[in-house]
Length: 233
Length: 398
Image (cartoon, rainbow over all chains, first blue to last red; front, side):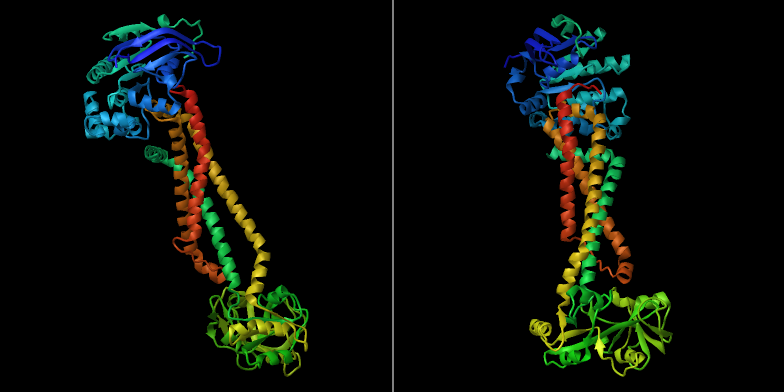
């Protein structure tokens, strides 16, 4: 198993036939590698994330995650594969408002047996350990409705969810853009550490190049894509 | 599926304000539907309970429904009469246990007066073979004595001892008032049957008013057989009797025919109740659909952790099912509460016999039916969530 965490080859993608929003000759993220992908908003980031997550399929070329090409799997297997191997972290509003803090972190193990099995202890204990490592501790905090948490706390809960059950790949889409500078740096270093701990590859997408420090590699989306202008987000 | 159910419950609970309103609208329509079914059942039972323990109603040659209407429901006018001789003949027949003569034609302030014999109180049965009970006083025994029904007593304020003048014919202030004064001696307990609006007097006593010593003709008469098996033979014999053109009917059969006639109204009520239920379900569906726009992030989050679009369809459908089940339970309980509070006045005033059990087949059917309909209605927002999640994927566009 020395396939990369993500391998993209000769990818072409558009929402309509004949349209080409994204065209990537080759892009690879190695296992355990932490890659900063720089792309201004409107550069096709969302489409790329959809393609990496196997929610969208390219018109041409292929996207492989852990050696598995998305296009070779039927739709429901793609959903399971995503749940088993990828942790997602979004810009904001990462949490389900009707679930408690802990239940939000435990969401992946509801759908993925593999990630439940990979927890070294009971998932709830593992989740608490992860939350503690991300600086969220104490029964009082854990029992608070998620809507009452600060944005920084919410993002850390989401990070714990993305890491629970040791997925091989964590994909983060501007997870710090709603945070102030101080919180941003603290969050970033925590996220990097935890990914290193679990051995997960990290694809971090942001428009803010100042955050690139500490990553193994920095790549600009504009350097990858050869698509003509007017790329849709 | 268990994950989806747990999520659905959490999600519904999170929106408990709207959820409660939605469930209430379903509860109201379920209560209405159940109430209509109860009233229908009660009306049918009450209808069938108008007369019981009577094996045959015998009258002049006429249609069975007509005979039933004027002899038991005291509605409409008898077109002709039966001779006293025929009555005596039947009454003395060895297979006959008893026969009660009925003579209608007089009234008091709009209430019909039924001429019969004191045996009426002995043999007449209604409901579940309940005998007539006097709430006050006693049965008529002597000249000029009346027993009045419960509604008559309540409406006119009559008690034992009140004097009344009977009129020939029907209707208030009927022409030709008789001279003789009558006196109320007894008041019947409420029966919930047409009997409540009746005044009873001695047949021959009434004949006096018309200047005869004994009434020569009757409106109809009721017959009780000693043995049920002889009933059909007796009915045929009476219908084919050559001495006089007679009609003999079995009350149960005629009541059924009449019910089929009246049943149209109750089918209409049922249709309305079903429409209200449909409106409740449509309301729930539109609430769920409207909320879906605001839930697109939630759907994207679930997709990102490995939920299939089918799981999202299940989630929305289960939410609808949960709301419907809760609504149905609330409606059935609320309906019972209301009927429990209203049972007594309904029975005594309207003759509606309502006695819902805690769990009957009807309620179980409503519970299952409404929940199933709710799940079905939930497919609409479910499919919408399915399609949205396919189109949106993981993007957090709102």
